[in-house]
Every structure is written in structure tokens, then in C-alpha cells.
Length: 418
Ligand code: EPU
Image 1 (cartoon, protein in one colour):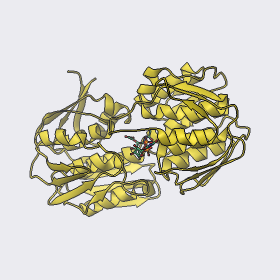
Image 2 (cartoon, helix red, strand yellow; image 1 turned 120 degrees about the vertical axis):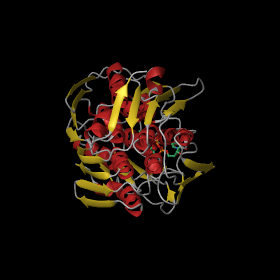
Image 3 (cartoon, helix red, strand yellow; image 1 turned 30 degrees about the horizontal axis):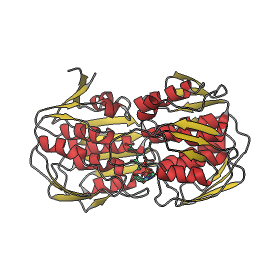
Image 4 (cartoon, helix red, strand yellow; image 1 turned 120 degrees about the horizontal axis):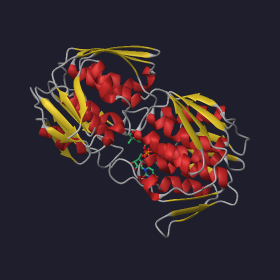
């Protein structure tokens, strides 16, 4: 299947269990390397990016076996420290294997990672932190050749609270002698999930969720069993879909605290949102209004990953909404496609201004990245016709059963072949 066909104009009703978080499970899969034993990862979503991570583990000599939503990984047999370029290019998270392999073997060799095209995505913070921990990194051949006779703890100050650099440093620091302190660490729930996983393996890691994470390295680690948290961006996607299409949906097994900026925005737009500790219910009549400016920022601010989705939900809103994308330089590639469907959006630099229109029409559009692709589907739910979304491999990287879930809620949507 390589395209998604959506017929707009259907409300969404019903409930859904939200998938495990992509951005939790990927660093956790890298972290299994530290255990040198068997880890059971529950609530593991079936995603292309997870398949890519499994391929990397297998290449390195580890074993992985999936049964339903449980993935068992045995990293006892890890025998290589290099990752081939084609595997590195498949996703951004491949770079998190660097900290884990270094901690376990003291050397690693890989190229720069791939991932969604959102503007420049350097890894200078990752490399600076690993150098502080005593890693020698040779970048002269376009490949990262890293070695550390002995990693030692250190003080790391991140100039931005980078999610990936925080994760990579946490993993390398588990293999470093002494104490590592990460200042200005990212505070995302996925960092807390990684800390919980590391603690279950026997690591001493504290402070995740705050700006300072402290790791005491060189503890003996072992396998463990862990359930991955719910995917707050997948949850945001279904909430935006429900808000735009109208109806009443209930998302189960999701932590509402992780979504407060998104649910606040949707409430302001006119939706009725009720949350209990593990559920969010959203009611919408499909007639939304423009809201106060949405500025993306690191957690606990409004997530950049939900920017395109909320924008798609507000295309037919009454009034105007301003978006300011502060995390990535080029994260408006969905806008040109939304304009093909009749959206009125103007972009200037990091700012996008959405003026609600009375109707949208179906069109042939193309996903250019994961969240932008899902946003095209959210837009398609509101048109008076048929939308064909191409290049859906981007969407499959991060959503499991996306089409099936929306169909179950009542959308007229199918995955088809051209
Ligand atoms: N940055 C640097 N140098 C670095 C690292 C980051 O300049 O060494 C900059 C980036 O260019 C960006 C900012 O710092 O402007 C934040 O990047 P961050 O490192 O936090 O992002 P990431 O780790 O590459 C993760 C998620 C993204 C999500 C961002 C921000 C994973 C696998 N990816 O990326 O998720 O947008 O954090 O929250 O966790 C997605 O799921 O669709 C996705 C893109």
C-alpha cells in the first residue's frame, strides 16, 4: 500500500487505545545494549522505525523476537561496533546507538543519521557531550570513528535542551566511571521513560523530567521488563482528527498531563475535553474557532511534533491562528500540500498564519515527513471530496494501524495502491 484515500465529511466516534510511544521505544531499544541480557519491551508499537532499530540490533549481533506488542531483545551476543550507512540513514534515532555501543564496547563506528527533513539537524551537542566523557571522535572521513579507552563522568551543559543529545549522553554515561551531570537536559516524558527503563536495568539515573539529570556510571546492569508509555503525539493526532471531523472520541491508556498544551489549544478552539488519569475524551461539533498564537517549544511547551496536526485541524476554523515554529527551521513543508486542498495559509520565516476557510476540497497530495503526512489526513477528513495522500512511508514510520484506527472511528479511509 502506498497511498491513503480519505473521503471527507464523516464525524469520528468511539474509543481507541493509544499506541506505545515511538520516541520512547527507539532510545529504549538502543539502551537494551547496555544490559547484555534479555529485555522485554511491552506496548511496543509496530512501526517502520522500530523495524529499523531491530535491524540495527540484529546486525550488531543481538537477537529480537516479537510476539504481539511485546518485543524480546537479547543483547548478550553483541559482537560488532559499527552500523552500515543505509541503516543509519533510515531514521534519526539511529544515532542514539552511538552512546549505547560506546558504553558497552568502548568504540563505535557509524555515519551521520537520517530522519525527517525538518531543516538542518546537526548532532554537534551529542558529539560534544561524548567528547566530554572521554570519547575520541574522528570525523575526518565523513564517518564517525569513536573510541574511548575509558569513559569518565563529566559535567555536560547542553546549549539547547536537545532530546536526542540528552538520551545519547544518558546512555554513554551509564558506562562511564564516576558521576555525569547533564545541565539543561530535555524534559520530555520520553526522557523519563528512558530513565525508568535504565533504573529497571540497575542503572543509577535520576532527575529526568527536570533540567538536571545525574548518572552514576559503571553499575552492573541486567535485563528487565518494561512497558513503554503511550505516544502523546499519536494521541494528539487523533484528538486533532476528532476536533476537525466532529463527533466524540475517547483515547484510553494515555497520560493527559503529557498533552495539556494540545488539549488546552483544542478547548480554546471550541472542543469539550475531559480528562481522567488514563483517558481523554474529546467532543467537537466540527465548527472550530481560531486561537491565540501557538508557539512550539521544548517540553512542557507546545510540541513541534503537533504543530502540523493542530494547523490541519484549524483550516476551517472561524478566524485566524498564528503558528510560530521555534524548534526546527523548516517544518512547514505540509503547508504547500494543505494549500492544494484550499487552505489559506501564509508563511514568513518561522511564522505561519492560518485564516479559516469555509470549505476545503479533496486533492492529490504528498507526505513529506511523518507529522506533516498525518496532518494531510487530518485535513482530508474535513474536505467535501476525496483526498489521496501519497508517500505514506513517512506516516508508517511513526503510526501503527493509523488507517485502521481512523476507519474504526468512522472515517471513510483506506490504504490503496497506485
Ligand atoms: N540540535 C542541534 N544540535 C544537536 C542536536 C539538536 O543544533 O546536536 C537542534 C536541532 O537542530 C533542533 C533542536 O536542537 O533545532 C531540537 O532537536 P532535538 O535534538 O531535541 O530533536 P531530536 O532528538 O532530533 C526528537 C524527536 C523529534 C522531535 C524533537 C523535538 C525522536 C526520535 N525524535 O528529535 O520527533 O520533533 O525531538 O521534540 O525522539 C517526530 O517524532 O516526528 C520527530 C521529529
